[in-house]
Length: 393
Image (cartoon, rainbow, N blue to C red; front, side):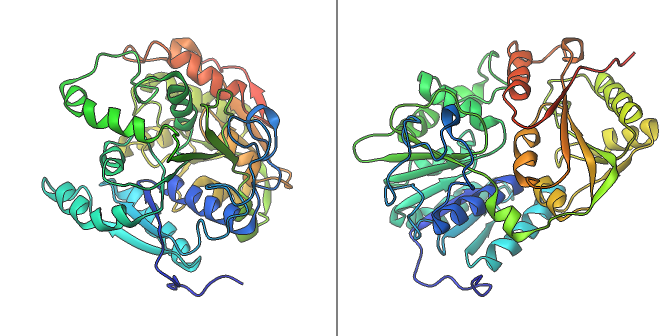
């Protein structure tokens, strides 16, 4: 039976930090997996091994820190929302915190970016919790906020839950001993702020490296090939999402999933709109589920030029799709959803199809390794239908 909303029981010594709705969703999935002693209904870990333990070499032992079978790991945790300024993201986060409270977790909403002094107030207010925590769960190890908080905590157990495809890059960089840099910025020269923050980032990276007194877990639905020594990988099969929502009503048409590749400077805006229009015409798509970071101006132009109905979801797409209605075919460009939607929609008749990014769509400012990374996102996706890049001109 689900705990009564707002109840937490004994004071939690698990502290979770999230900055996006997807991160919060995956913290709930992590807590559910540990409370139920599952790893996502047999979802495969590194190298296709279900429930792979440290370095992907077989299952971890129940009761190990960060391992399934530890029902106290996520029970009644304190979940801290480091709120962003983007209105759509804030709205989705508000809805997700309602679900978290219904699951029995305590939620602290921090206006972490509400002015120049907000970071100092936030960090000061969280210091005692950080020092008392036995386990810290985070959704974005690349976040400067999170990296700063990691320098305060003495928690022996650190958990990284999915923040989309960035998780693949984080694990790769950790395994290679590299500095932590988001994939779409890698290859560029560090700016003044990067250089100023470098000591904190380096310290955070050291904290995220397993040691004799520190255990690190990655809870992920992403394909992770190269696992750093000592890191435990726990597969996320979206068991909580499937148990809580659906199954959905499936319609005959197609839906298209938007990305923020234009906003992050990876893909040219005109090329992207042309590709969306071509995909919609080819597959008869009627709806476009906007990414929370897509600009209103781009979405307005997209609706005018393609005739698609633009939908701005109030929850992460995995939950929207599971609640339904959802098209029989879901079209996407390389993004997190090509890995997560097949898991969330397991047991339904929905087909997820991914369209490759043509190299000619990349913007002039795109990272030199953008094409390779995006191709890897597509190539490693399981249970999806591959589409060739569409013609935009």
